[in-house]
Length: 295
Image 1 (tube, helix red, strand yellow):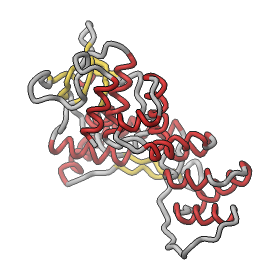
Image 2: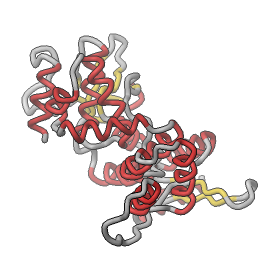
Image 3: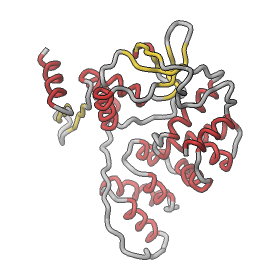
Image 4: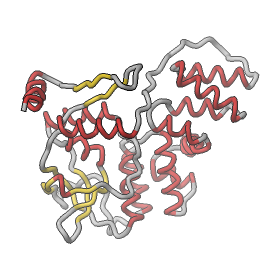
């Protein structure tokens, strides 16, 4: 898949003007720069970052270091803008790193910056289905290519791309649920099969309330469309995440930066009560957190 992506990127961006995403063994060499000198990519295609996975990556970086440099562009004032690797940058911040390794690229324009950011994320399969679909649309629009051409760029079949793009036909509330990790892409495809908007909304709410598995939702869609299911399937519930307010998510983010580990704010039945959970990964990590609390 990486070879397909490499050839596709060359088709969009001339190799003489913009190197490939993976840092080469020759030049440019990774540099160490202060982490507070790096600002996020203003064209970042990602919208959702899983707190638990960020915490796990942060723990790994704290123990073993950053395995792959971030990709940035440099500005005359000595600051940098991220091109690729925002998830790794956030994990480094959680880990308390003061400096990080970077590889400096200089895209000629926002179109090249966007292509690098999108393809880097798509290459890592680091986007949810809706973000991936939005990334596909942006690449096709910016470079004037069709789905067949896009398939050669990202190493996917035209059918796979077409199925992912259909996620954008879903109502906004369902797209947001997929972006937040409450539903999977399979849930979205099953809901697309329900043509009546009112009925689809009711089934969507039921899927959230009852933790319906993808196969359960597919069975419901078949029954509503008058199609008998071919064989019984095992019920496979999936874990659906509770929606938190923007204020709660921001408090979690600030606490995670403070303690350098995953922090969860769990609401109770009463809005005035809840639970604050601070995760630790080993006894040294536990002692570190307790030391910070006792200061």
